[in-house]
Length: 245
Image (cartoon, rainbow, N blue to C red; front, side):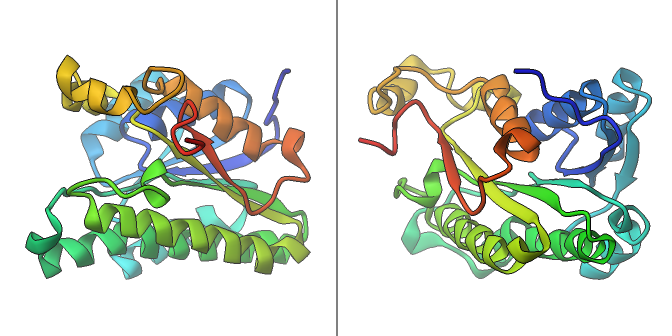
């Protein structure tokens, strides 16, 4: 099944590393004009070396005003949006601090809402519809030790996805999420390279392995594309069966 985004414009947040970076590159390979958003200039510079056609936007999505300014032009003519930017700080429930709570919700939920507002207003005004994919997690539906705030933000993001699908659907704007298990990004390999630690999670995954970045990217591309034109408001597990069991 070939997917083409020729003539489409896409925004990917958190595009400097991991899933976001791979998604931006994949969209560009499929013909999309890609706007890559991240707060780290060095990551954007290296991304442009790999794919010079990508348009970089360096902004901290936790800053509402700066985000509004940075995306004002880009957000007015966008067909596809991937809300990938995320923050995670693991703390036991009894040790959760207000600053970590606020930072997590600001990036994982509030920023996704804000960027989606900017993009969806443009989609609505043009009347051509569009597709938005939020990057959630299996942690939205399954409690994980020391993930109190992270699980809560992803649960909120799932419900945000559903409400967006409800309210934006009449404008032919589809909104879905992908909910991966542990993904073998560079950070994922560092965090889960210990076999004993990895087994605590893989033993609960029927397929017996973690997700590769391509597994997640392929699901994102499908949900963005016209191949999923009747798919709206879903939270798609990319978890090898973890949530099914």
